[in-house]
Each structure stands twice: as structure tokens, then as C-alpha cells.
Length: 40
Image 1 (cartoon, rainbow, N blue to C red):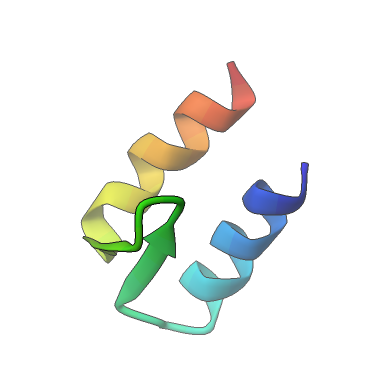
Image 2 (cartoon, one colour):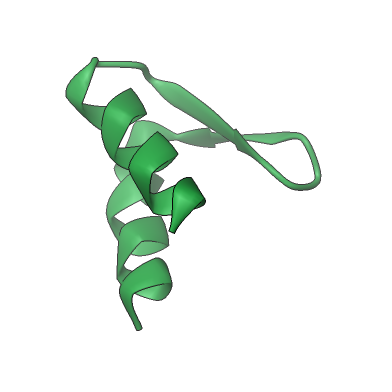
């Protein structure tokens, strides 16, 4: 899944915010939850 790859790339590069669909910045601490949702 493309979004999962993007999320992992941002996380491993130490990017502290990720922007999803609505354009709302998400804190890095939320990436684990995002990845969990993507994998389910």
C-alpha cells in the first residue's frame, strides 16, 4: 500500500509530521496508529 510506504519513509527519516487526506498534520506519535490501521 502506497500510504504505508510513505508513512514508513517519513518515520525512518525522522520527519515529525505527516499529512493525510484532509491536510491535517499528524504528530509522529500517531504514525504507529496509522500503520496499525493500514495493516488491518
